[in-house]
Image 1 (spheres, helix red, strand yellow):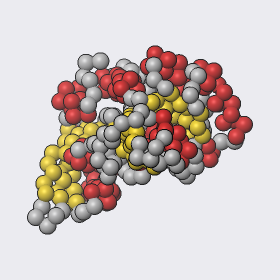
Image 2 (cartoon, rainbow, N blue to C red):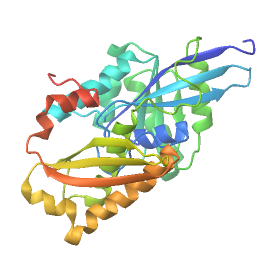
Image 3 (cartoon, rainbow, N blue to C red):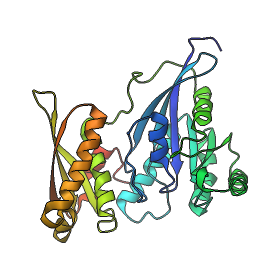
Image 4 (cartoon, rainbow, N blue to C red):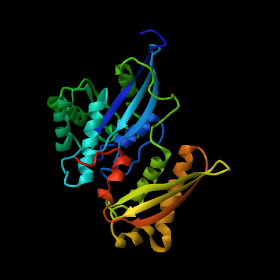
Length: 306
């Protein structure tokens, strides 16, 4: 390979809910582009994270990672069906597929079902065992063998998205496996998510983290206004939608303490991401059927009729 060669392509990150895809994406990109919480199914929409990689032979590569919603077989609700469909569509559209497995939980039935379906996708696929810092090596080897017995993966990688262990080898292999071609995005771009959507996602992450089990998935966030101010800062107005009036005081907290904490932490993250002051204003609104709002699915890039 001659110096000056460029490669670029899409890498879909697939996995069961809570496998650590968003944490891995942020680690590979080197910045916050996908929200993370202990709750499964945090990622609702397709998230692109863009990373540049310089290889030893002089090749420069642009890896466009696609963080997809967690795949599971519990698809009773419209939103869940749409999210699972988006995950498989992301795999079909990618150049490479990486199946991420939470090694601390093991190669379970959900991961097994995903691996079994990869043959139908018809794309080169690798296995990534995550959280290796929490698992003995003999158990990791057993999981790798079990997974490769279901699907013959091109390579198996063992990493820790939290500590960074193994990530360089993973990124180098992916970069070298991408097709030759020009870069797809500017070299300094980390994601293709519009700032309005990114703001809503950052607030939603804090809603999940602060409200724990009190509002399981029954909340959505929408950026209602993003206003550039003369001093270079931005005013961002977001609405947190809950499904029932009884959930409003849960989101607000006693004396507004919870909504203030959500706003404070989200504002800090947004300020760091955009590199300038952000003035964040939050309201809580009741919208009983937000999960069946067709317009919202369009904003998330999800198919409504699945």
